[in-house]
Image (cartoon, rainbow, N blue to C red; front, side, top):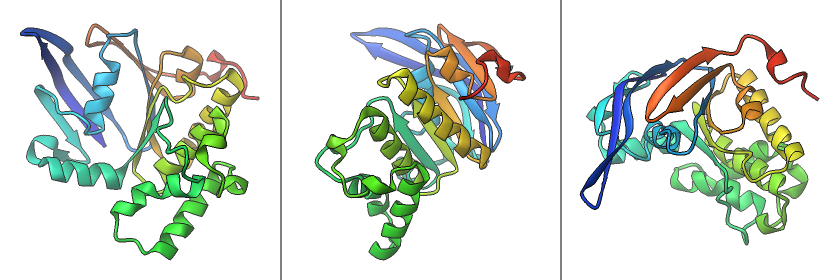
Length: 234
């Protein structure tokens, strides 16, 4: 699904160049669950932005589903991002005064799907995260854990091929964080490809593979072969 070779990203601030990525190479197969870890400034967030088409690299090659992003216009990248990618952010990015239904529907507003069909898709996505009874509640009245469930439902509503999750448990207590990771784990078991950025080891170990970054480089790339690393699920 994803193949990156010698990926580089350089920013220039006040004429001083900063190399956020220094030659990153790895691939992601369809259906994998990968965690990307690293300290602040390691390049993990920059990498996620490039993988999710929110930014372009300054060097190297990135192929998504067999097509090089160098051959795609910004409009084409935006189309693929809206169609094939779902996003879950640390800060939820919900509209507080809109209902759960209306927040989850937002990605569908850019499609040609009829309103009745959109309503069905929204209800299915909200039900899948256990919030069917909150469908018409304003997002601002929900708890942090519930808001993140809404964000996951919004990511799912377009039936994306891949979900990018950027510190999805960062603003949650441990119980809510565990519930969110259980939902992501369940989605993975149903065949979703998930790429997660986190600084929390316990969260990262829900994945099947952990990529550790440091100073813009991949420090290690290892499969998790024993669930005992984080103990049994509860």
